[in-house]
Image (cartoon, rainbow, N blue to C red; front, side):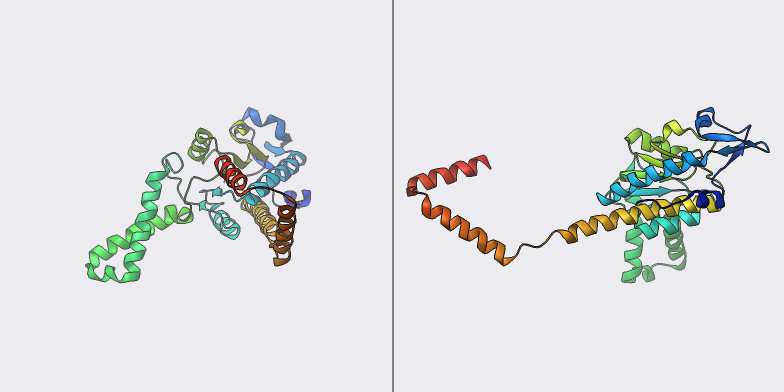
Length: 276
């Protein structure tokens, strides 16, 4: 089971609390249960159904070896995004989203390369040949690069899927993913547009506990998918010497009963090579 989250978990994390009535997107109407003290209340039955479906999608993607990029730069998401993406072995962006991070990935790769060069210089001791001011500038560059691209430094290609916290704040990330046709999994609060998200999960994307619950659940699904893939590889039994000997025996037996001239054998061998 890719998702063992319960209704109790959702309630305790405040997933059902939406925004005030004046701040809403009419497209979210189908996910709203009602209003309490001028605050929209999200239908947690639908949240539970959607999060379980999203978890299955994420688990299957991870089992296929796909990369899921975690994105969340708001204050409430910074720590959770880093913690759970790292735990799942996935790249993440938890500071400012750099425009073109997906649509102009080659430029981002150049920045990653710069970070690697600076680290190499530090390892080799070449930085010691620079003046104090030059070393300061290099340190400043490194700190800036680590802040903005540290979470994606090992991402060698565009991700296969995105998990985004607060699709309104991360609208550029959503736009870039939509443009490239990359599927998005994301909690959608009452002020979001669910039509832009492939696998929306109706829920509070502002509360720290709610954000952490979403990040943890998606990370757990990824880890489960990876474990399934490893299990499948382990279950593939190695070829034994006995199996090889059995195959040789069958071939020898067949060859003994088949009458063919050297010329016929050569001709058929060539035909097989041509077909291959």
